[in-house]
Image (cartoon, rainbow, N blue to C red; front, side, top):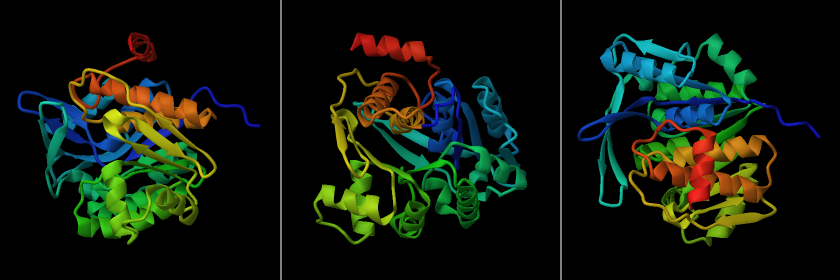
Length: 303
């Protein structure tokens, strides 16, 4: 049996942007959040994205440097602006989003350097938002085709239109080895794949077999999570925390899941760690708070 490495190379590919709240802003975008969390968990992390040649783009690059992420993989677009999302929180800290259109991350280009990264990474996460444009969708698919040795995580994180999702979801499932969804996205997928009304467990078994997935992970918010691997299932109850901002909790969950999966942890340990990291994010402001593994341990002990 192969011994786990001390550090793995983790990639997020797709959007990086600013989450803009009423009186402040945070680095955002699911692949960016995932890459930042993976770096804070101790792995070598790479973000593949594109920003505008503007003040917001330069500030994003500087912020990524503070997390010690390489910025050579952040392309600069001289014509299109840096992406933004306007974020509104309800009284429970649950966000709603309004995303800018026709921005830099919609024009991500595949390069020989990206092919090298893809061939050498141990895991990569991709979603649907950046695939709303044909240019970035092709780049993501080329990257995934080159990342054959990697764990390939499809985090549905649906922000695209229903019409776009019909075009995005099936080939994304074909390219993935791990699917991560919340319960609403799972319902949406049943409609897209014309299996609405099917018992949830039967639909999950269909996904595992049809798309040769190694894992399907479902998040239920305060209800915890459930992970399936084709043979067994593990359900973890939600943790009772004081929620401040749930933005990016799913991205943290994905980072925790991959961190443990790459190290060969049992299904329950994977689920518990991912659940813990997602809950921790809900107690912080913004999708990318600075934390250490000791902070996570302190949080666990406080529960």
